[in-house]
Length: 285
Image: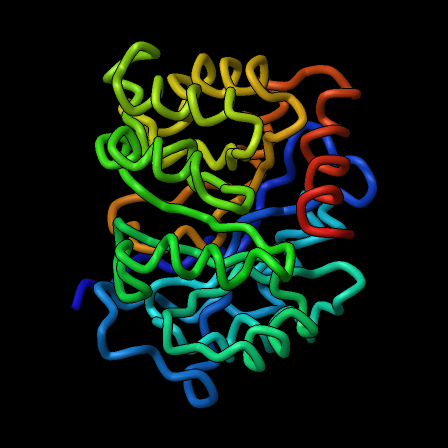
């Protein structure tokens, strides 16, 4: 099992502060492991990343709302993620869970009451519902008003695009479609992402550092982020991806990540839309 780096102990302050009620739409909580042991089917070993540590990051950035995303290392056991949302408080926290087709309708309704608003399919790290269950689970969660969140590589997104566009629910694309900046704006994966955004049913998370081909400080991501902001300004979201799981060589500074977003969206109205208004519409704050 591959051990990954822990998050930084200190969050350097960004050059600007997020507006009130800004939402971090993508992060994870790991542990404590005596209460929430990791799933044996995981592909990496994360360091514990606990609620107090995340709240320090949120305070440094000015985050007031949060979406806890179920990580692959917990499989379909959402106990840690749901517990985190309850501790943050459902007035400011939501959940994106991982379930498979064994889940019953009563369990889905209970998860909804605990803040769940989406189901994640992870074709990169696996250890969740197989992609073959995508259509059936989308139909199951549609009556609840949930969305499907998909983490895929740019190559697989190009193949999945038409299928995602045909689902009976909104679709949220993780990590800017998993493309590589080295492939350029005309690469097949990014063009597939733009087509999805044109469908009017898709949203995208501007968690951009993972698509960078040059590495920190990730300036090569800017043209891709700007293209998405221009294509679908009302369906762009932002997230830290704290504690940046599965990284083994370097660890991003979350203040720098907010600064990168500020460069992509320099205007106050655009920042307000992506950080506050769009998440409120999608997650029901």
